[in-house]
Amino acid sequence: MGEPVVVVGGGAAGLMAAGSAALRGARVILLEKTDELGKKLQIAGKGRCNLTNAGDREELIAGYAAGGRFLQSAFARFDNKALIDLLARLGVPTKVERGRRVFPVSDDARQVVRALTGWIEELGVEVRLNHPVGSLVAAGGSSRRIVGCLVKDRLLPGEKVILCTGGSSYPGTGSTGDGYRMAAELGHRITPLRPALVPLRSSAAWVKDVQGLALRNVRATLRVDDKELSSEFGEMLFTHFGVSGPIILTLSRSATDFWQSRPGEPLTLTIDLKPALTPEKLDLRLQRDFSKYSRKQLLNGLRDLLPKALIPVILLLTELDPTKPVHQVTREERRALGRIIKGVPLAITGSLPLAAAIVTAGGVDLKEVDPRTMESRLVKGLYLAGEVLDIDGYTGGYNLQAAFSTGWLAGRAAAD
Ligand SMILES: Cc1cc2nc3c(=O)[nH]c(=O)nc-3n(C[C@H](O)[C@H](O)[C@H](O)COP(=O)(O)OP(=O)(O)OC[C@H]3O[C@@H](n4cnc5c(N)ncnc54)[C@H](O)[C@@H]3O)c2cc1C
Figure 1 (cartoon, protein in one colour):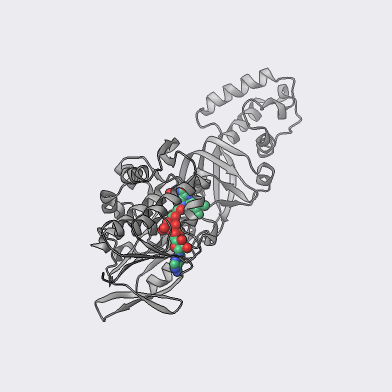
Figure 2 (cartoon, helix red, strand yellow):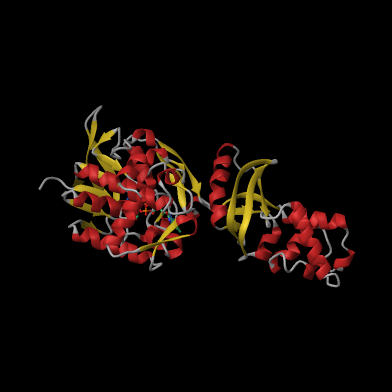
């Protein structure tokens, strides 16, 4: 047998690349830096692993803030349906939840890792754990080609190397951004790295008082001076430092983009707690509740409408005395209350760092990678897959699907 296909990194993309290359008959060596495969995969989706999204092709492509179009060829070869079919064959049936998010029926990410690991082992992939690749080695002048990689200063020869080292977030999982450096050393341009899908910090003192409170069916809108940057409907969460949860993570993508050009500039998040009600309907609802609770204090007059923990905050922001009897609330005060309920303002001062992000935005410039094969346009025999590329998706399973699809395509092309 000739030289092996060397896969660097045993995460979602690396496992898929190794399996796909081995399926095509290649001898495959998978080098993983840590003592375990798929560490990030195991914590994905809070340990339940939101594998992919069941949307159609166009919806899938629209699920990426960067790289959606680039993924078209990869999806043509291996899309969400192909992934779901493969996992079913490997004994991992899946189910579809809200927002077309796909999870294993077992709700257990470790089952996915076990299935993929078992699959590549059965296909004869040689897995080498605790093998950190230090750099990639290329030869030749103007038309360079890959000749192998250095592991602990020893050259492992390989005419085909698939770089699947992931992003820079959650470094405890092994994804410490090594691939960006290795690709840059071979001349690849790395677009600026920044957190995507990351919780946001707020300077408002009251968020600490409501930490742990989750809000469902709300609309959150991110604004700079009154101009809307982006808006999302769904679920969010208050934390001790600010806000998190699905819609906040999605909104964070436009926030971190904004801070690229205007670093440190504060943003405002407004939260519509009752998006299904017009201001008029909300006012009628307040009137009804206030006549029901007319003898109570304001603090208790809102308990049918708002989560208990949030009522003191809403009254604080409206500058209303919580002990005021409900029947003494004026029409103007009631309308002011309605305005706050339709737009709770929250000053956003920044995001958590890249290490705490779900995904890294930025990465190897897609212009330098052939979307039909994932081969580098600069170095022959070098393939790139997964988060190391300048691809990032919204929440909903898009990031894992990108890693699986690009991994599959790279493995196949490298084996051919
Ligand atoms: C908390 C959390 C939850 C998430 N949940 C979801 C979700 O539910 N759905 C979804 O779609 N996405 C989710 N993501 C994102 C998704 O997990 C990643 O986008 C995806 O894992 C990227 O796959 P990858 O193979 O490119 O990189 P990774 O999965 O990060 O794998 C990279 C691998 O390369 C190895 N490596 C790194 N450097 C070297 C080196 N020098 N030598 C050898 N090996 C090396 C690492 O140890 C690691 O094993 C989540 C991310 C996080 C952090």
